[in-house]
Length: 497
Image (tube, helix red, strand yellow):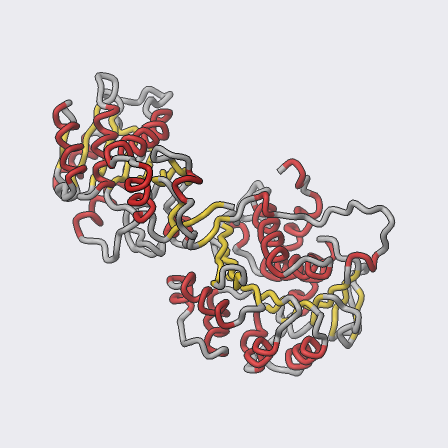
């Protein structure tokens, strides 16, 4: 698990004051990391260049711009030509100094008005474009000139690197016109802005560079604002004890509603992820031989899935919530249509001991927030303000785990030991998951782990990561089906991942 910070400038200041790192040395470390990233891409194997490889650097007024001027100084030579587009004149002493150093070595400085013609003239020679306009402290809106520069740069066919944060993203990862990078080199620590749904289209691969001390030393004095999940957090339910039976691995009940297929997908996913017994509740028939059917939720069910294909009318939701309220130790996964029922608020307020995981997508989250009296937000607002709203929900409902689905999955919970809400990011899912039914699969996976004795947080994390990494194993991004995803999770050799 890696730490993520909303604003790392306080870390920079601390490193200067307590570890005696100079601003100049930090700039050198960042520019060296950028140089390492672009160097393998400077000479195209086709030998397409008319003249010689060119690196175009976009420099802003602050210390991100200073990083760009320092990079220009490092790489300018007879083998590579370098041009810096000065998007705005340097405003910090470091930026002014680094520009003077670059100019003294003959680096070409362009103004934004010259960029289009330069890009057209050098179209065959530009091997890399490096964005050093704005860093993590940028605030929207983006001015007209930098927006035009970024638009021009995005149209250049070359390897693209961003310094710290792709310019155009604000501290929460929102933005309109954004630099589209192949790699983003973070200075010192990961930034929160890199893990929004919007940012996923623009960051490319994310790398963290040292500023002169170890990353753990750089981050040690401050509490992280969020955490990046890693594969090592995925604790799969491998069976190690030989003397077991089906009851050893729990019993999942999936409440069947208007759209039966959703419940059947959740049931298949739960069974395929290790639980010993699965029952479709609310029906007298199961089309799946290994899945039982019952008109009622079995009394011995360890975990219940409520909401998948349930519908927004009828008695199944109310009776399901009543069953869970009476079964104080029965874990549950709440999804989809259940958030549209007014009874959800009273249920969550009374939920104290049993594990409870909620898995809304943004529209469902907006409905849930309003049902719970936490405010009226559009689906778009729940995406733009998702960290604030996830923390708001988890602060109110401290016995629940919230998994907010999206291009980047956000998992939130109240952390008792720190007396604050904690937020975790899973950015590993792919566009192949944008299919109906994949959310039902995720609900089934979580419920399976709950039935096997996982707590809510570990169930949500492990199921979410397995769901995401399995999606990466489909050769064609358009070909994933929910049943295929279940089969991939069942058959994949997780131990070699």
